[in-house]
Length: 446
Image (tube, rainbow, N blue to C red; front, side):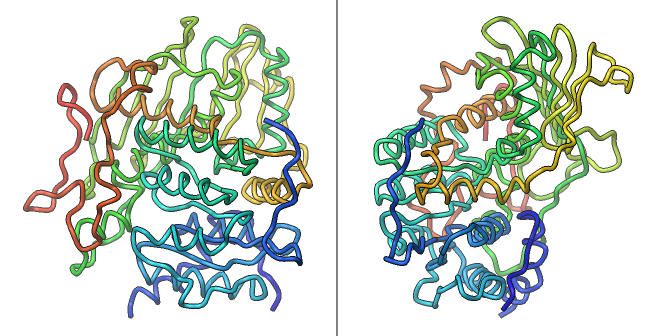
């Protein structure tokens, strides 16, 4: 069977929607050349069989060199079956996932990781709240990792990921993250130019993700609140960490990248739920002001409301010019001064681009095979995610929030994850009419 090609995870998700719907009805240094099997085939496991996970598996199996998907894991059986069947149709010779290696339940990740064994690769794409637990186990078992964004939803989770990343470094286990903007050829060149002084000293950064709404899927009558939330994790803060972490994280990461991964020291801001009527607990607009140690600022606007002004990208202002870069800006541009006119255009990144989603997997598997240098992006990625976490806390609490204090916080935003029962209660239960309470300034974060 000829392999189908998809340009992004989104393309792959679209291709598999019908099949999944049908199932619902019934630092450096070369790595050692480690692999599973004498034929150099790398065993792969997928944990989290939603659209992001299926797309990541498609890209992993599209890398050069022999790979074999040997296990999938998800909380829901129908998602495991859907992923296994869809990926087998696309990559017939690279998928060997019989029913006995389609693992379900909250502990299913352990079975999937065990199935690939040391030197294999696991794709972690379950809801972000579970990422620290899954990462810790994978590192303990000697397995290389691709982890989708985001990596945690609270400071405790970030500390866990950082600790796992350090242990992975000791074991020379590669970790590549789903912050795919770091794998754009055009953006790499733009950031290099900015860091070389093309716009002078950076003094203000503006990041935007302002566009139409993202909606819940309908809740079937036979699903519990927990089951419903897991299937709509993007719309519940205890699972995804808010739209700031789930949707805005790429441009937060880009804003940190141009500053050499410097983190802000504090943030204040506001958020609200003005027009959103979905039965979830997400705000539909956010505005944040981050402050760096030198007093410089980063401003963030996030909005998911239909039929309003849209903006998508990162705008970096320096003493000599302005850069327009980031997710949502396919062609990065650098201007002299602060008027974004054609006359002021100094450079635009219109060189041939790679598929960022594919390229990050290409890099990971080359590193696993020892063909490229060791790669561990987790600690760097945690800086972006922690920037998002303190932004969420500031928006929902109405307080100025300080990074140093929050890095020590013991307050969990995802309690009792390891004792969840799929047929039991959720950490966030609705009122009698199905309404979920949202965070209120002065009263803390939900």
